[in-house]
Amino acid sequence: MTKADLVEKIFEKIGLSKKEAQEIIEILFDTMKQTFIEGESVKISGFGTFNVRQKMARRGRNPKTGEEMEITPRRVITFRASNQLKAMMGIKDV
Image (cartoon, rainbow, N blue to C red; front, top):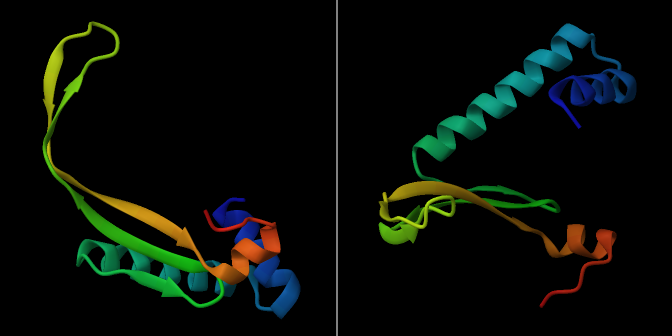
């Protein structure tokens, strides 16, 4: 599903114009991006939680050449689905 698909769904279900639906989607994603930049989590009830995690530097290996290298520290975003979403999809907790 793309942003355009989301806009189309909002247009069909709510009846907003496509321009208004596009603006809502853009505001939503911009807000989420800014929250991630600030290092905070985004929790959407009934859907799941997006967390920002700090990964430490570590030793790795280039799979093509086999050469050892240092993988730099970085921040990553992880997603954990809510129990409601897992139940809808038939996923059992491990």
